[in-house]
Structures are given as structure tokens and as C-alpha cells.
Image 1 (spheres, rainbow, N blue to C red):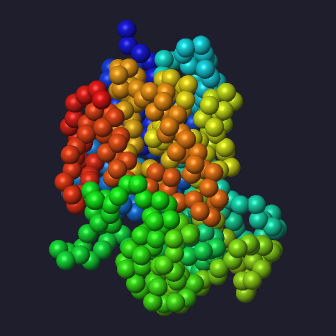
Image 2 (cartoon, rainbow, N blue to C red):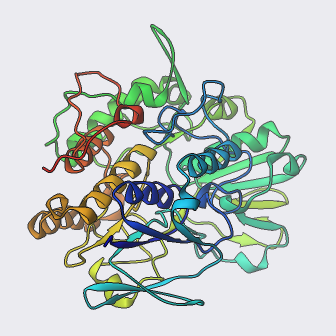
Image 3 (cartoon, rainbow, N blue to C red):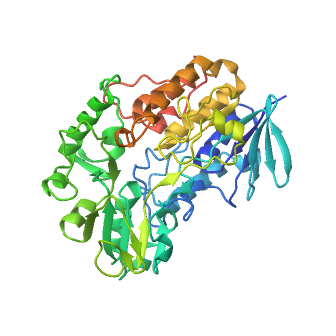
Length: 456
């Protein structure tokens, strides 16, 4: 008799989890609160219509479902949704698993099993995967005057196509991964843009000019290296700032509000990806304003001259796990207002004393390969106990995350699990598909397209 697994969410994390669990012979039921698959990638759910991926299609792909050769190197939001639909169809997920759309699910412990409560009734499962993702609740800070603004106010997750802002005065708040790209897109569409942020970030292009030709950013950075893994945070910050200073020479040569001191081992380096942003700033097409606090007035913002038509908050997301019962939330050490580490988990997946519960894609900076390997590990552990991490391993992993959460906010790294290649290698080893990479070898999802499960 096969085990039954409930998967909460039908975005990338939920879909790859369904596929991996089905391959392990588990009975799968997926609960999705919206009316469609795709999760964050649906316009208005977490991304904007003109968005392109920051990483190439080689990295934004599941291991056993590559993009077609004719696809753009950096797919659009719409292309990503079509990719996820094609993935679902290729593996016949909706035929092989039960999908419940427009269904709010509440998860509770039920003895040695799990209960999923929906408007349609009470369902019991042997295992639960939370695949709702890290970026699932748009965050707008509590700003003075927010309700008095006479123009339009939106989060980056809910903005219109850039062309609708032509001729308008727009203020973009925040310079993480969405803020810089949105500012550039608005300028290209004919908007008058002012960009507000607290501190500058390193702005990287999607492609780098290399001796062998242009290479996408993930080809440059996601390679096996000999970098020591036991460096302190200050050593890591110093190394990264020096390396970024070399890569972003134009940015620092401008000596304006984008300048970052490269001999800096105190503040964690922050990185974003955006084509044309530095050029647009240099040419005066984007006005910069560094502000620690903002105050909104009916027709604009204090400190910004003239009337403002639109304010776009590119201020990131919170992680909403309110659909889990209070005892599960306590076990996850869930802090909903902590946008860095809302839950303390071993390898971003496992909580202590929560057997047969796994969280997939629940960390800052989720990538398709890491989600796929997490899902493979979770499915393998549900099917075969020898794949499950021990209580000691989980406790040690949680303590490592706690140490990061306890850091002052100004000293926290941008990503709690920041070493992509080493993280991939750990996940692959745990799920039985380890690969022995050579130095400087590029790490790709396609490397893991074929792999038999082998216990640790």
C-alpha cells in the first residue's frame, strides 16, 4: 500500500515535488489556492509582465526538462509560465496526481499523520510538502503618509506593463533584484524615474564579456571552485567586495551614490542583476536619492521635488506560513516578520521533530536545480527511511541558521544559504545523485537529468 503525500502549492516547488514523489511511487495530492499552476511566475502573483529571468535558461530549468534551443537565453515571465505548463504536461502531473485549485488548505498534525483541512473536507496524509515558496506575500513597509497619497501606489508584484507608465513621474523604492530592473524598464518605456534606496548594491549584467565570448552570469559564477568553505563572514565580505569592485569598475568609477568601498569587511555585499542600469544612471536617465526613511505626501514624497504620479515599492516579500497550525509554526521557529530567515530549517528543508514534513524552495534565492534536488531528497526520504536526516543532523543545521538569524540586521549576508555550488553538492549527496565535479566545471541542472537513488 503506497503512502500518501500532500503538496501545498502548485508553483515550481510544488510541481517538481509532485513529479519526484510520483517517481517514488507515492500517491500525490496538490492543493493550490489560485486557479492555475505557476505560482510566483504568474503576472500579478509575484512578478511583473515585462520581467526577464536574472539567470539563463540553462539554470532556470529542471534537470530533466531543458528549454528548447530556440528559447531566449533569459526567458520572459510569460515564457516561464509556459515552461511550467509544458513541464506539467510532459510528466502528466495532472493525470497522475490529484490537483485541487482555488483551495485554501490548513495543515495540522494528526497523531502520526497529517490533516489537511479544506472547504471540501478533512484529508489525512502520511507526508506533507510545503511548496508555497519563500516569496509569497508582497511586503510594503509601514511608511508615514501611505494612505494619503493621491497617485497610484503598488508593489512590484502587482505593477502593469512598463508601457502604461509612459510620460508619468514614477518613484521606485528599493534596489534589490526587482528595483533596478524596474527602474530601467520604466525609463525605456518613457517614464520619468526617481530611484530611492538606503545603500548602494553591486549591479551585475546578465552577460559578461569573456575571452571566449559573452557568457551568462550563471556560467561565470556557478562553477566548482577551490574557495575555502570555512571562511568567516568578514573574510567572505571582504573577498566579495574586492571581486565585485573589479567586475563593476564602471559603477565605482562614477563616484556617485552607487559607489561602494571595496576594502569593506563589515557590511555584507549586496548584489543585484540589471542590464543598463548603471548606464542609465550615468546618463542622467534615472535620478538617484539615498534615503533612510521616506515620508509620503498627498502629491509626492518629502525630499523629492515635484508631483509624483506613481510609487512602486520594490521592497521584497514576507513568507506566509499562516496555513500551518500554531504547533507546526512553533516547530519551524517561524517568525513571519523576519524576511531573512522566517523559519529555521536544516538545509532549508527540515524541522526538528516534524517527521515526514519537508519544505521545498523555502529560502532566499531559490533556483530550479536546488528545488529539484530538495524535492528528490524529500521524496526519497518519504519512500525509504535511510535517506532521512538524523535528529542530530537537523539540530546542527538549525543551530547554524539560528546563528545567522541572531546577527544584527546590518551584518546579515544577503543569502542565508549563499554558496550555490556547495549547496547543490550537499543536496545531491543526500538524495543519492552526487556528481564529482572538476575544478572550474560549470554546475548545471542538466547534469542531474539521470541518477539512481543510492542511500548515503
